Length: 413
Image (cartoon, rainbow, N blue to C red):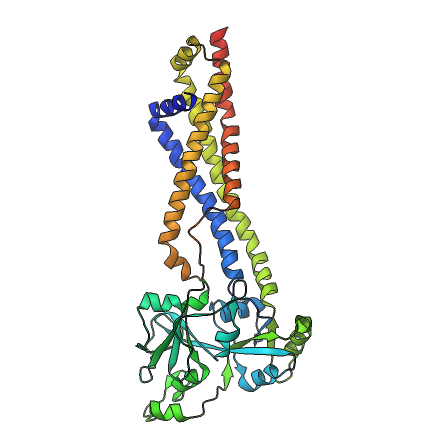
């Protein structure tokens, strides 16, 4: 009866209740969105690479090196000589080395030149290895392996031909259209930038630039694809490389040796430590967004309290009737609190549903920023949010509830 009475009372004042409900829904939506995206962004970035002890590139900032080599964000400042890579890869402490060559694209997706070791040693998340949904790794010069998003969005399947573009712009007029690549493999989804990457061999990168100079194709070149495949192609330089060491105890020693490499300036970073540095820089922005979300919620809760308080003045007859039938003042106090809780829980349900819908619709937009945000917003932290929101609404409704209690007492006296 108590619950039924609270619902009927709210329906009787549906105009003001709907406005309060909308304000609370928006505040809950903002609060949940900030917290969920913040948590998912950390998870997405942290799960992008694992099992890599060192990432090595040309001398630059550690964050810049991490962003372009792992997340395909930004551009490298310089390249590394192939001889330097071979020298460091031959270090007795190095277990495996994966070279990376960037600089080309296909319809807005990055192209990465590497070796077959990439598919064997690279891992993401909690040491998950890359696996193929269809096909195999590249064996020939003009083979290409697609990430799952590339294949899905562009509609490619095994055996299809595609043309790479020079540079990383989404629209390019410098196409390597005389040397198309054949799709030989499609990787399973990983939730990382791998899904949005085309993988070719280092020989393939060299092959498409064999008659290019300073970013421009040399006119009059007559070399054919068949002739290129017979050549012994060897890269002159690469963008970066990843190292796995035999023992993690030697990580700092190998890092120091690379940073002091005499033949050319290089930088070796620890992926985990650099990610921590990135989140430390982002913490101010995170806290600011979270503070704004809390302020929006506080404003909505105060609006709810004001709505309930103003409704007390219009409910004098209702209060009198409840007192006549024997309802004690405490009953009216709890009735107002119940109304506040019902509005809050309804707002939470609407806000959570709206957020889930928006996340589902914005998956493609977020993936362009290499953010793979789960549409499941319910977790242990969500339970704490529900409890905190309900408690806040109960506290905010205390003033109108006390007001109703006092009015009931006055009627009794």
